[in-house]
View (cartoon, one colour):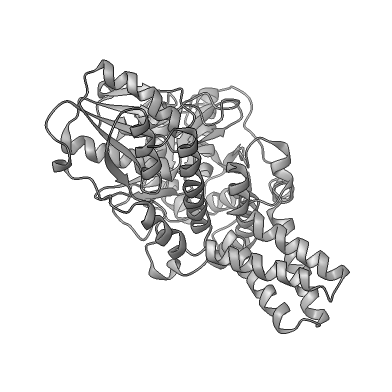
Length: 256
Length: 255
C-alpha cells in the first residue's frame, strides 16, 4: 500500500499517465478515452499538489488537538514517547551515515521543546530500521543523536529500536514505561499522524497526552499554497495514508 | 534561471506541463500540433525522470573526476568541503536544520578522505539560507556530522557566510594562503565538480578533485529505470551546471 501511495502521490504518476495518454492519442487520435484519462489524471495531480488541499484535509485529522503546553500534564512521573518518522541512508565509497528526514526532524525538535518545558523522567526514542536490508542504524538511534545535539542529556533517553510501524511502536514502549513506574505519557509525533498514534497507544492500555510536531514543509510564502509543489504531493500522500491506515488499524484491533 | 530550471524539472513542472497538455487537448481535440507537443512533453519528462538518464549524462559531464585514491599524506594539505544546503525545520518556537542527502554524501566522502590522507585542515564551507539569517549555516551542520564520523573538532575550520560556489572559492582562498596550504583536495558531488574546480582556479587555488558518490533512488535496480522525483532532481542538478558553467565563465568566475 505504501509503495502504491508513493507512486500515485509523486512525480511518477503524472509522467506515466502523460506518456500513456500521449502514446494512446498518437495511435488513435480520435480517442475520447485518452483525453478523459489525461484530463482526470491532470485534475487529480493538480488537486493533490496544492498545499492548501492536504493541509485542509489534515485539519480534520488534527481536530481537537493543540500545541503542547506545560499545564497539559498532571503531576506525577512523566515520560515523553517519540515516534520515529523515517530516515535516509547515505552511502559513500566506504562509509555510510543515516540522516533524519524533515518529518522526523520536526518530531525530534518538538520532543526537545517538550523536554525543556516539563523535565520528564525520560524520553523513549522509538523506531527500528526502516529498511533492515540496507540500514545499520535504527531511527531511535538517529533521533537520540539529534536530541543530544539539541541539548537533551544522553542519559535521559531510552531506546526502543525494533518497531517497524505505529502498532509496534506502541506495543514495544509499554514494558519500558511500566518498568519505570511512569504515570503520564506525552506522545510526540507529526500532526497528521497523531490520531492514529494515540489510538494505537490506547489499544495497548495507555492514554497519552498529545504533543503535535507541525508539518516542516508548510510554505513560508503565500503563493506556494496555491501552486503545485512536490512537498504538497508528499503531504497528500501522508494524509491519504492516515485516512486508509486508521480503518485498517481499527479492523486489526490496533486502534481504540 | 536556476529557479526556473528547478521548477520545470520538478514534480511541479510535470504537473503544470501535464495540465497544459490536457487543456490544449480539450480546446483543440483534432489539432496535430497539440498531439505533437503532448508527445514531446511526455517523452521529455519521461527521459528526464528516469534516473539512469541524468546519471549517465552526469558521468559524461564529470568524466575525468572520481574518488580520491592513494594514502600518502602530504604536509600543508587541506580538504575543502563544499556545502549543499540544509532542510530548514520550524517548530512551534525553535528552528532547526538537517543536512540534505547531497550534502551528507559530501560529508561522508570527506571523512573517508580525511582518514586516507590525514590533512592539516578540513575547511567546512557553506552559509545559511538567504531568507533566514538566524538559521544554522551548512558549515556548522557539516562540522557536527564530521565530528560524529570521527574527525577531530580541532582540525575543522568553518566558512559560514558564502551563498554560492563563487563565494566559497573567494572566501576560502585567503584562509588557505594564511595557513600556507599548498595542497588542496576539493570534495563535492560529481555533477558540481567541474564548475567548482574552475571557480577555485579563478580564485588562485588549484585543487585535486574528490568526488562524493550520489546515492540516487533506493537501491532497488528497477527504481532507477522508472520515472521518479529523484530522476527529475538529478536532471535539474545537471541542467543547473550546464547553465551555471557558461555563466561563471562570462562573469570571470571560472578558469
